[in-house]
Image (cartoon, rainbow, N blue to C red; front, side, top):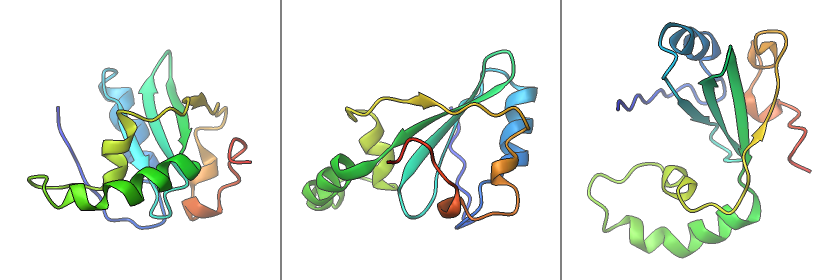
Length: 117
């Protein structure tokens, strides 16, 4: 298992994500933008697929409750990664037939997420 962190703020490295998964089909790549609206999970299933987990109110409630706990974790990371392991939300597939053009030259927080409403 490898953990790579990129500080790209508003844009997913979609070309790198897709290429990594095409080369190594067992790769699973998670990405979240800084507003914590949703998390993307990219993986191989006869092509690169994306599932989305909308964070919503449950995430923000847990975040507030766990802020003190983060202080006691050795080498704490972004709290959304801890949340994923116990999230009651359901991952939803977000199909792309155009190679994820929705992420090219656009800030991720400006993406029209169909599940967020």
